[in-house]
Length: 83
Image 1 (cartoon, one colour):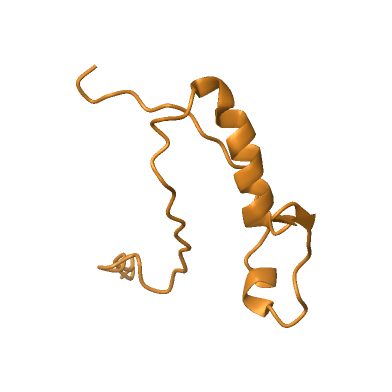
Image 2 (tube, one colour):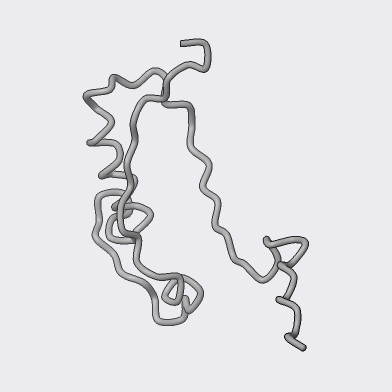
């Protein structure tokens, strides 16, 4: 008799790590400036620039070094749900 397939976990968020970054509202920005802001945010989150100075990860910061590389940051205007 075949064994039944395992049931998926009830709460799939367990045993998973998430990182959350809060940003200020971008509604006052022009769409043409979003790529510039996205690049600046990428540099800050990737740890390559802080206040205009290029930096690297400290050797004692193991959590960040194991998190993986940030691949991209993109910003684009969202359409209104009413549109």
